Image (cartoon, rainbow, N blue to C red; front, side):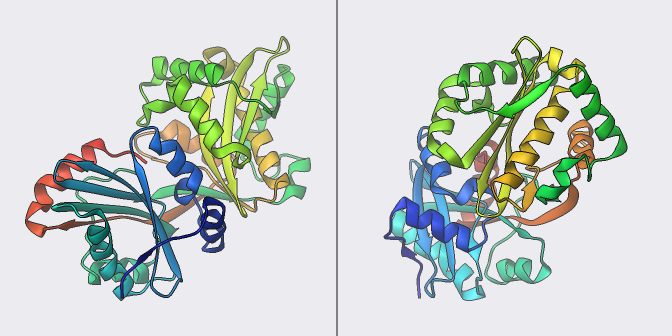
Length: 328
């Protein structure tokens, strides 16, 4: 049996995604709508028994069709489901060469990993997104104080508050300001892997695509100048760290701690019980790791990435070329 096209609305798709326990926002329709501005098209499929689903972003380059599913597939999948998925996608896309790649954000499980391997999938030589993250359980009552933070993180939060830095939910986020903050970060730390974060028009499209699913926090000084922003997507009981940028001045007065604290409070208030800090690299980006860990994040691993290429003879070349171009 083959996977079939999802026939419902985007609202119905999102309800299905949440019901299947999506932990990250990349299987939501909003992500596909946003990525369409970068010439990616959404292909939404449901497994034969209806217990699994996947949103693939697709693009054709000559005879090659690329299908990329960050955060999927979702649900309780069998070996047969995983064997049939590439065939179903190849039939629908009708390309001579298919490169199919997924980043499964389910909790790390040897059982699930073996299902992929037995179904003919393999680990890619070059990883695109990390399978290592930090997750914090959210309980709204905790946030009457700084419970859950490390002593150093708590101290920096108090330092920010003592310097009259305040934070609030940003009802109408300004993409011009957010892009400027990201460019400020790039000037000191280097470009983001997803460079749309410093692009005003891309941010405008992102904010529009996610709407109420995106919660943006702005930290300001006593004059109202924006020092730091932090944003998370919230779907079902999961919140996912999505945007973060702090100006040079904001770093001097611990504005990022104030913004992060307020975002955790806001996420819990909106019903999220789990906050995913959005991936970490302890070795290559220790400062970010320490910040997220200090905010209460506990180490967690996803199943991670697998790929499938047909015809198989094309795999060595296609896999390397696609890995250089894909981003979450």
